[in-house]
Length: 351
Image: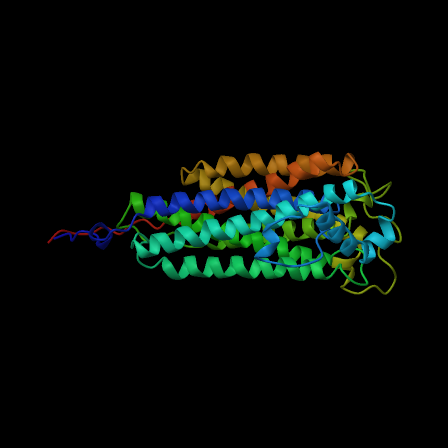
């Protein structure tokens, strides 16, 4: 005889928890967009101190603004590029970095407080607490990574380390992907209490690995300002790869440190990643998931936005749409991977 699911004998609310996670995912997408604007406007080094608690309050008086501006004047970026900047100009770049950090704090609170609430009320389904705690810990680590990135540009360098920028972005996207996957598992649990959770298939692994590699090169492109190296497409100038773009005797470090090489890889890795994602989309469509169509459409749009960003000379509004679409593509790809990983419940015989 079939026994009632333990899920029905608890106060667990998988759908409610899933909706909370989707809301947090939306905040992370906003954070990624603001982070992109912060980088494109060269605003990331405007706040030279890390004050996780008191830093939530911005300068409120003229004296406080002058103090913050004086701290900025001490770093190499100001000395090299922004001498003569007015206080109003400083306030403009301060705004984006402040908003970026404020969103980080909001996300942390939006994750931690409801997690405690659901935990105390026993509304988290069995087996999900360790996953949610891991995501919370990863979010805390992300804040540390953000400061580690900013600190790289406060002495000697005139900008942040592009490697640390890549780590910062990819960590955010791993958190985003983990939250979306967990939310989808919870939606599935609500709909089919007897069905096992989705598994991560080899195709999903390949497609998402290619996507993350491409997103990583996108971060390197932004960090090195490599998008300005060549603003033509499909050729870089008059050739597929410019003569002298790879110095004689260059080592593997050129793959992540040479703006020309980074732009070249980012251009063409896009099509390799697209092939993997379109295969994933096809499989998801066969599984009757609308995520397949979303992936196909967003991949096409992402390539078009990438080309438009290059041809426009990296206009901020186009570049920001490119970054937003990348985050949406990741969400769709995770949903497609989840769809093809559904395990059909085995036939249960009645005795």
